[in-house]
Length: 103
Image 1: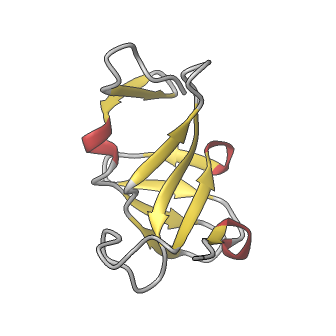
Image 2: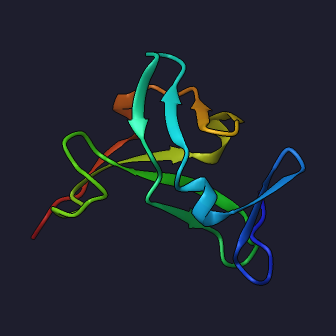
Image 3: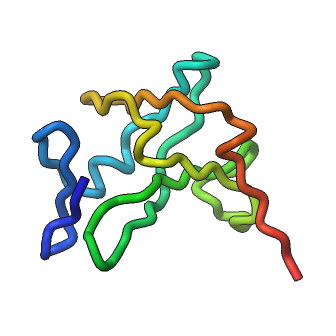
């Protein structure tokens, strides 16, 4: 997965899409058959242009309007497939759930 020079397209298995299209896809965990929500952000390596992970609001959050202390960090290698409407991931939720400690 690479981000192009204009930072507007991503590629998974040879298919290009805009970041705004990726954010509209629902993430489904194939281990639990549960929806994790839609990605709100991503982490990428500036040096290589590779996407490292997708970030999804944690339980009870809606687009992280109420803060970002709880969120799912889904490593890119856990993504099984990106379809027209959904993204299938295979991950143990307790391993991808990130709770940020507030000072």
